[in-house]
Image 1 (spheres, rainbow over the protein chains, first blue to last red):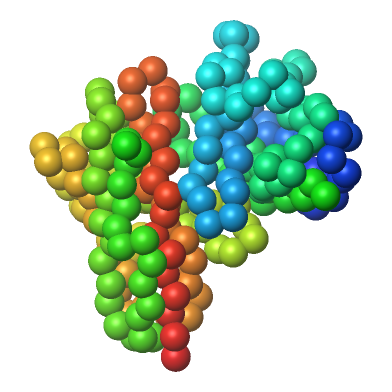
Image 2 (image 1 turned 180 degrees about the vertical axis):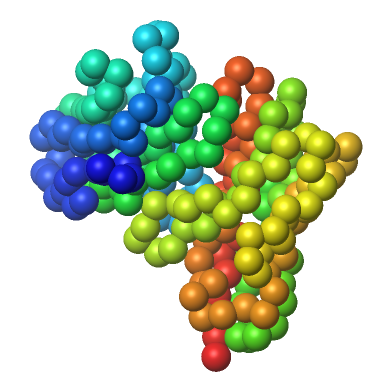
Length: 112
Length: 111
């Protein structure tokens, strides 16, 4: 596609359930980022993939969060045993190295 | 302390008026500075990107400035329109492809 695609756009889940969020970056972009944006807050870095290098996981808030990027393209962010404080918009962005970031529209997660 | 500070946190301006948003950063070594516009419920969209040697860059009615010595940037919106109502996010790229985000300036343009 022409832009970064994220799915689902909205997800409502019960506390304790696992969720998976998907990001399909722009074709050819080697860098992929996941961010979290809580209501009224700035963007919080979660994880960064660059080519075949080991991902930078320094932003993941707990071991309930994990992400993978298969074949250097599509990425999945998994949150296990969701908590209410996980409710936020999860944004994915891709870029060529050191170039402009292109963001998806985000996945809004609500944990009841 | 946040590595990228933006001010004011929010402001309301009349349609047609100008406004200036500020971004101060502390991270180093500096690579580039970007301003993004984020409409409510949407992903951020790039407005400008400036490297160390660039002092000013325009994108339509948006003009960004950069003073890499004082580590300050501004985004000036000229002749504001209702569609300018959004959050404006300052992002500084530094070190080994690391990014530091400000919390954004929330702008509301009223008729």
